[in-house]
Amino acid sequence: MASNTTSLTGSQPNANVNDGGWPKPEDGTVERSVGGSDWSTYTENPGSPYPYSAETSFDLPVNDDLLYFIARGGANMGHLNIVNSSVVKDTADVLVHVDYKTQEDLDHANICLLKKEEENGEGVGIYTPDDWHPIPNDPLRFTATVTLPATSDGKPLNIKRFESTSTDYVNTIGDIKASVSFGALTIQSGAGITSGSVFAGVGTFNDAKASIKGAFDVSESLALTVANAEINAQIGLVAGTQSDSSTTDAASGGDFKVSATASRGPITLVYTSSPVNSIQSLVASTVNAPVKVTLNNAYEGAFTVDSSSAPVHVNKGSTSDPSGQGRTRVVDQKSGGMDHITGSAYWQPNSGPGVTQGTVQITTTRAPITLVV
Image (cartoon, rainbow, N blue to C red; front, side, top):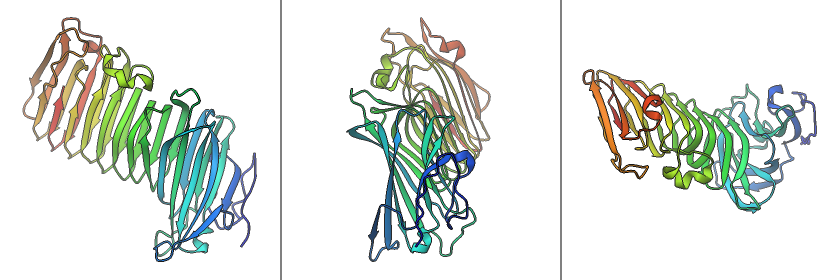
């Protein structure tokens, strides 16, 4: 069995090196690749649908401007896990585990350490040939685990930018918001995205075939997009950094944009926290599926709720003033029939800037909408 480890800084491997998949030029240059018989460890799994396993690992410098993960190719499916660690170091560990049926199947995979010089980025890619469509299906099953380290001063680790791109990987984020801060976090998937808890300045999550669920805190913007699946998210808006998230209700200010878009699937959003005197924008849209949005009562601004041929409801939430001033919660609404309501919510006296700049727009068709404000 031919060796397949390469060190090709500044170049791309020849696609004919072996039968495995390889990265595209835009994925970055290949610093190292593992495939064939060059995995670090091999294990037998008697009686399992996948009788064999193998593993290899890579290190990514956490101070780089970009860390990324790519999975591409036929029959390339599995899980990506993003977790934290109590170990103090300056690199993130990426462990790639594969369960496979035959060595011939495994020979179709190459795992590459990648580098993008212009973006000061490093990443890991899992590749199989684009035109590989084996029968029976699922000859390989990958699990990639990105373990983010602790810092020596105990403060949250700052990752400037992290991107994950795959079509058939479940992306799971652990309960990491207290220990890791992402400047920008982008995940594109096709098998589901779940977050225990995560904090980012800008969060972008897109799943082409499955649901998005979990807790997402942001200090600037959050975009959740699915096709024929569900969005069920707990959203925290943080004025400042994630170290402020435990006291968000006492924080003040900020300008936040949130969108939740489903081509045809239910949307449930619960705002767990948001700062007083903030400016908030929300657009939630789907088709032929219900929507329920519960805003944090710090929200001030206008709202529009519209569903063709189905009832819509706007309910007042908590009347306890989040600023501690004892103000009165006011929710004005105007009905345009059973399927359309406009209005505004604010505190008086001493309303914040959101009263004139905050906006909530919720739309669907042939399904109910409930807004708690």
